[in-house]
Structures are given as structure tokens and as C-alpha cells.
Length: 120
Image (cartoon, rainbow, N blue to C red):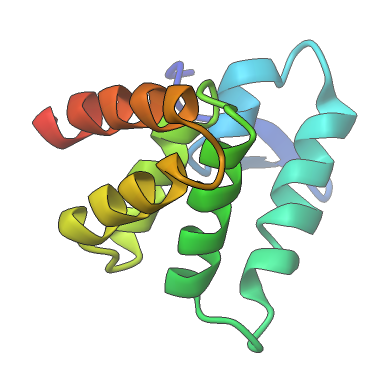
């Protein structure tokens, strides 16, 4: 079994070889219930609701993570925002804007994180 694959059995004996989710990779063996809630409820339900686009959800999530100085979760959501068609310039502007609402240190931490992600 490859480390980025998740292997369980579905039904009687059909192996499930779907790629492992980020939550499964990070904490799957340690907290399967939190992985299930993350994958099924948060990303399987909340992120799929039609009232907001994924692009809008990404902007909201990135802004929240910046304002709360949750830099551990920020890289993944910056990548997701780029995948959801948020432009780099927009993300930089969000960070600059939030410097005046959530504080200079939160913006400086976020901009360093964004700088690293944009190098990828």
C-alpha cells in the first residue's frame, strides 16, 4: 500500500484505493472520528453547499485563519484558494487589508506563509 493511498474494504472484500485526504494523512491513525468529520461534514457537506461559491468560501476561510493567527492551517487553505481561482494578488490584498483589522503581527505571519506557498 502506498503512503498516500488509503486502503480499506468496501462491502465484502472490495479494496478502497482512493487517495488519502490531507486529514487522513495528518491524523488518520490518531483520530479517525476527527478525520471523518473533516472529510464528510466540513469538506463533504459545508464546502459543497451552493449558497457560496468555493472561491468565496476560500476567501472567507483564509481571512478567518489570518485574523485568528491560525498559521498551521493557512498553507493548505492558501493552496485551496489558488485552486478555487483566487488570485495571488487578491490574497496579498486580503492580508494587507487584515493588517488593519486583525493586527500587524497576524498579517506579517500570513504574508510570510503566502510568500512560501507562492514559491511552490
